Image (cartoon, rainbow, N blue to C red; front, top):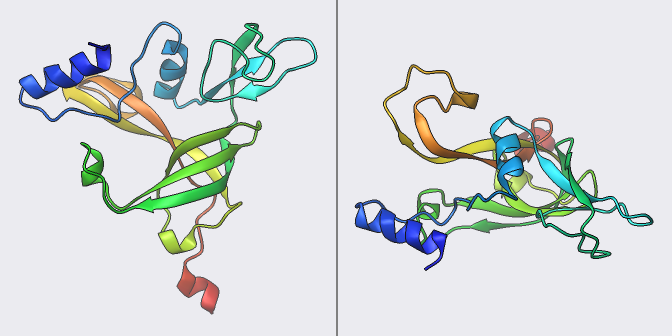
Length: 181
């Protein structure tokens, strides 16, 4: 059984619904998730001569030239909306409690495309090419009784929480009522 399967089975046995939205952190991806917890988005960039391509999702090799000479690099957090779909039904926990939500693909300023979610924007205001900015939504975690303790970005008292990169309009999106006048 995979770690995810064991986790889902363990959650079900403990009386909690299995989560299908949480990452499996390993030694390779830990820098990515640690940076996210600090409010930073990382990419991988190839260092091979003649390549230099940035890519996302994180891999241990360059998907363009197959070099293993790649390193973590901070992204500036800007993106543009490439495409989206509004999800009205999803039976997997915890997505059912989030519907409707905007599943999206964005073009990061550094070049790679990234699957994500767009938040804080009415569906009617979404536009291909609209400027977006990364922010992080905290998911998962169990209250460990330390609510008064200090923690990153409001996670005090939570263990096992993850900062998930999502995007919202870079500036407040005009509403349809505002654009009609």
